Length: 398
Ligand SMILES: *Cc1c(COP(=O)(O)O)cnc(C)c1O
Image (cartoon, rainbow, N blue to C red; front, side):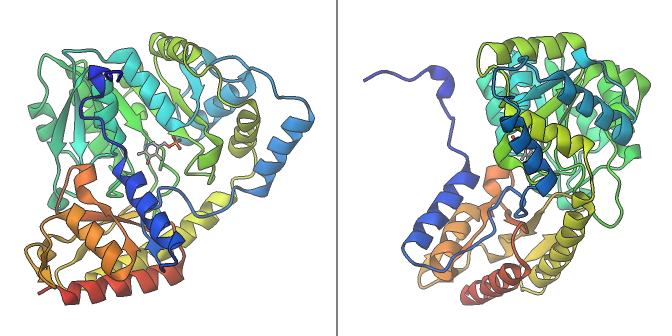
């Protein structure tokens, strides 16, 4: 038997995908399962974007492209940054990858090595610590609390910086909490990062999904000097319901983008040519789809948050963005149903799936076991029925 590489030690399959797979299995057995695990919008990709892809196929745009993206898409990305974030980048400061996740992977490979520390506020997106470890670096997990709005304060950030700190990850709005930093909060974090020469990695994939009129600010735009010390990550997956097309992008200092492009050139080569033309239309074409989707998500968020808060021993943090509710469920721990004691978020998630047929993601996957994540990228009908089932389940625990 071939021995697997040592760097895989501790690498686990994404818990989000595991829960989704288990829910699918139960569904296949004929069980009625309501899924709150979804990590993608339940909307269809807009028609104009699909048409652009079909046209690209008909026009023969089906060959290799430049590794880091076609110039037309790089220019569309540059125009987006200029329009939405007041950030001006040259073409050689932009890379297009096979999804936002791929840009982040390339970036971590480009800048992190053994001996480096990378500060990751928790609750975090599951992939950051794993990708850091795959690059040989040490993830430094910084816990944030609901009382702090799940945001890392400048003082706490500063307290975790050591000589080995190479980078910090900011994900606003956040997956899994939906917390979003204000411009003033970001500027203070930027000042500390700059003073300590810590690279700021900002994942803004949920930028467009913000509620109650909140407008996301890119941390890169909060201080003039920061741009040279910051990589901005974004993509079309969440904003345009294009998760399957696999297009993400990053902008930052030329040498970093060049290194990321070299890594990409030796691994995946260019992202799919057809998807790139679709992304050009997504960024340059009508943006009318976004406010319509945001309006629907906001209504679902409000319904889900109030329904959760009506359940004894459960409370929901009201998210400012993304499409997840991070709900505190530790009030149910230590209780039992039919002799089965619930001792943490993973046990609760399994029990909920078995008993009342709802799929949630355990908070332990995101670095906080007191919570579970529920996605509202599902219909109002499912939200009403699913949260009702959660209430029934909670009442069964005594
Ligand atoms: C979905 C997601 C991404 C990237 O998704 P892609 O489909 O790879 O573009 C990046 N960061 C976070 C926090 C996400 O939730």
